[in-house]
Image (cartoon, rainbow, N blue to C red; front, top):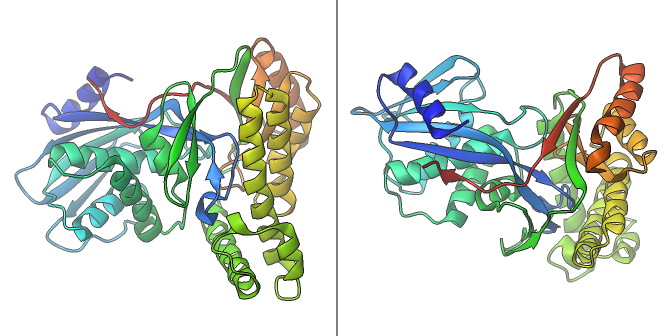
Length: 384
């Protein structure tokens, strides 16, 4: 969509032109899954699929939202404390406003139209895109003196404290800081980052969608975080470490009297994934795409067997990807329990490979999977 199309939708709903139209992308993550809240490194990128918001000021203290793709409305007054909505989707906007108000920023009434082309439920962070779009809109609508880094952490806190998903910072950071044809090596401990060129000749980034929705994702996500915190606390009892980044498998085994069962497995995965992420970046710098792909497959095994956030559909797709010489690497991506497999596929073989894997998927589950080709795009911005 372009600015004119979003503006037209806004005018149809609110009988006026918007002051600003913002595009905010979803994200992919090549490797480094479930380590953003464990002080690891991640390798995300913004994608060329967006949430769009158009906004105008009001003369009262009402927040009036219209979700064009759902044809649903929501209205809230700023005269009373904001409360989460049972409708779900307004909370990604209201959570941002709630956090900005708590931080002392001055927010008044506004109209907002929301639309987009990010596949919902695919694990590419439509929620973070909407949060980033909202805080970016508020910056321009109310002339807020707020940095990009502060907008990222505002969006993250909205998800943590208002929506109730105890996510790390990766999704919001990638959405805000994305750069076309680059991945971001993000240090989740201090938000320092480096851009790596990622335009592989003859290789396409493809998402295979299970069309399984994340019914367990939010509660299990929070449980995994608690398990990791429990394990890290036990490691700190024995060793003078601050984060999992300083931990080793030898340390974990030395603490196996107090770290057992699921907690042991979660910690083992995190320690291995932090090391795997570093190895994958070295592969990328050296142009070793086959080595990079091998690390992706290893990550999926860890997510499935140790972290236990995969599902039968995701595992089936990855197993069938391994049979395809045209696929360099693949793994489940995102929170888990559904969503997508991300795969690096020879561009000329995408359709052929998809058809074979989809046939296997149909035979096993009685339905088709989806396919999205992703380009790496720019981060949250005003549309001219």
